[in-house]
Length: 473
Image (spheres, rainbow, N blue to C red):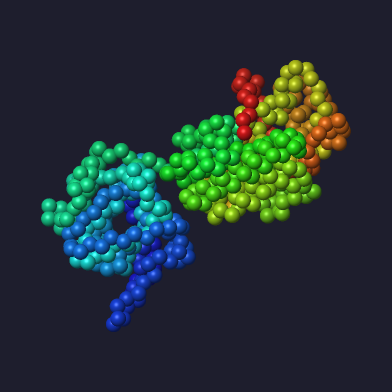
């Protein structure tokens, strides 16, 4: 009796699973789908939701070749087939073919976009497949097909197709040369008008980038109605980040509506469609009494903004397939602290800047790169801190450095306390210490850049005339 094993094939992602058959005089028993054991051996945890059966009365019944918008695990209850699979996905393996004579003691895992076909070699063959999406007319409209008889595929059908039982529809499928490749899985960026959203759209040019005008995530009906077919990842860069305004009556409502209500709507669609959801959080979920913060530190927000982000983090954590990225002091293409200081320096203004809040800058391009690293390397789901590396600084330190880099005197910036700066103003409470520990993101192979080096590059680009854009959440 063979041992349970998983092995690769010449088509990327197509896997053959050897299944132990436990037999005696009564027949046999097998574990046709055993999530824990198979995932441990390398089968993707593809979360099947529907089981389909195809019964073939006579040998020679031949079906396919269909590429579908879901992953599937194929096996036999009884009988024998020649299985044939053709990669119809866009990319270098397009047209690659794999065949296998299959009985009840093996299964084959087929990722979305790989065409599937088979020929029954014995009467009363029962063919079974688990899929990770529910069949629908909407889904069927996105199938891609290739002709069973195309000589370019090189499939040696044991029973000649002229003698086989084939549906009229399957006979009419196009030849490989005429097939439009199955499109890659889609990533949707929500909140694409803000600093991080712009950086993500630049880093992922093939992604669908949605601004608030394209999709209002606070509208549950609009989120549910969006065409999510084919989407495997949502990156949520939308947020109400007006920290001080969130303390007002109207601001508090707006912050909870977008930061919590909007995330709840995305979590719902991600859960129902098994989409990976990436959320971005903040140092404001902490009270700042610790000098630095790890991913496992309990949240303790001081103000409304931090409270809404902590609530959103808890919602996101209910999804098995999620990444939660905690960051701080974000600088990108839009209105931000560094641009403000550079503008003040250029106008001869000598500001007073707080020197009793401590943290590190994060540049939106690096934040986007870290998110892509987690997705592309299939890092373990969960929470990751991500900022620049290097010394912990204050806002006053950053302002002085901007003045220096723009050719002005650091002494033009006067240090002040948070309390003094807040006199006569309505300001939200801020964490004193915002620095985030970076060990976990480094452990999965991403190296955050040094903060001062990235600040020099950013200010240099400003001096070269990069246009200033207003941020949109």
